[in-house]
Image (cartoon, rainbow, N blue to C red; front, side, top):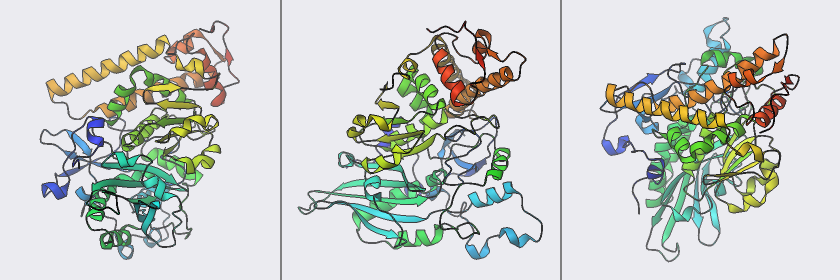
Length: 496
């Protein structure tokens, strides 16, 4: 058995020992979201996270290494005693403050700080019946199909893994482990996964360490659920005052408060140092193709064999490419929804989606060409849509942007090495690079639309950072999708 997590070598990072291994934790500090120190969430304004849950911006914690640099965000075991929500009987109820009406922003922040776990479960692999739901709380929770999400197809080939997924209107995180046993009944291997469900994927990272520890305990001592029962009682979701059984999106009039609270929210999914950096190095110049497709809200499906955890990070990073922080832009376009891991049971759900990014370990999806616009197999990005095939070719501007991105990264690494700069990070650099590029495009389009001659010329296209010839088709798609189709396009923008 491999003790170290499988995601470590794949993501090229050094895992920070958990509290249970080190016997203590490093001091934690607040890193509030700000334009100068931010990691954008995987969606465009005005939404934060997915519409099935509030999942808005909250301050994330980072642990300081000996040199003072930021390490991966602290998980649940690092924050015990420092990040616990107040028990229900001790909370400040919004209505307890008197007749004064609490602002939408305050309500949003208070809600985000509460624990939102709606279910905890254990899934096991049975040599006769396959994947099975072994145990769960609450008992009446609809978890049909979760056994195939918490243990991905092909997971028997790896020793450990973690999986983000969607289950109905909730998001889940499950940690999987595979342990060798001397048992003919279990055919020499015991496989289990411990997972949770929440209305928002942005809070799941808090419990990664807990789930990793619990799945090891379940392998060593099957059938003991007292820790999971106590966890659920302590963390179960406090539903909105309306008493609705399902937590839905923030009200429409709360989005402005969300934007004002933090224009550039922190990255919320637990990510190792270098997650976005690895993502961009993995795809190389092809990252510019994914950027365009993400901005056009295409349906993107990423295939990879297990472990699937690293691929779930790619799903998240792909969403980050489409961030826009200009208020009002993108309101009418389909949401770029992260489905994370999907299997054949999700086919009917994907058929109804206009825009999403997901990953799978099941090769059969490649044959389901009506389910996706773009299929990514390893580093190979392809499409069967004739209208999109030209977008897979890199333009001169694409290569120039990638060159600038690489140069900025080298300058940052040099600054960190020579000057001890531990404030800036590659994650900030990459995410802000694409955020600024997207803002530049839509700011220019807005200026052209408001001018006496609303015509997109070669000069305005260059002002967007695009190639007047090589990016013509991309620009036409962009104008149509984002409602700028009333703009005139200069005849000088000839096809490449």
